[in-house]
Length: 126
Image (tube, rainbow, N blue to C red; front, side, top):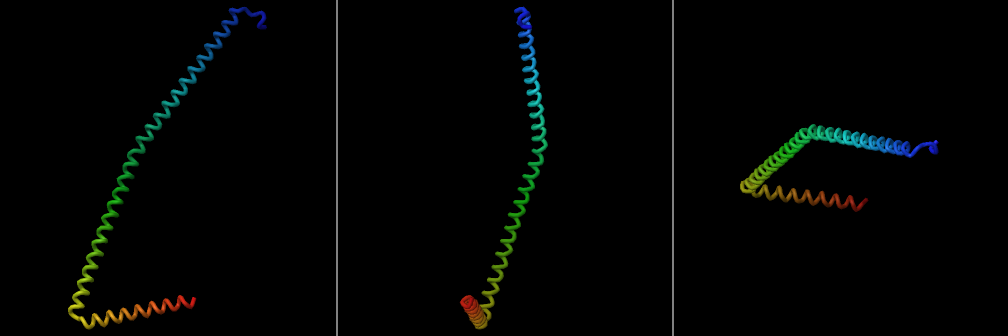
C-alpha cells in the first residue's frame, strides 16, 4: 500500500501525525495546568480555613499555660505563708513552753529512732 503512495501523500500523513501529536501535547499541558491551578486553589482554601483554627488553638494553649503558671504561683505563695505561720507558731510555743518543747522533741526523736530500728530489723529478717 505504501508502494503506491506518492511522496506528497506521505508528507501530508507526517504533517497530520505531527499536528495530532502537537495537539495532544498542548491538551495534556493544558490539563496539567488546570489540575495544578485547581490544586493550588484547594490548598489556599485549606490554608484559609486552617489558619483561624490554628490561631484559636494556639491562643487556648497559651491561656491554659498562663492559668497553670498562675495556679502554681498561687499555690507556692499559699504554701510559703503556711510554712511561715507554722514556723512562727513553733517559735512562739518554744518561747512560751521551753520544757514541754524539749520533752516533745525528745519523745519525737525517740519514736523516730524506734521506727528506724524496727524497719532495719525487719529488712534483716527478709
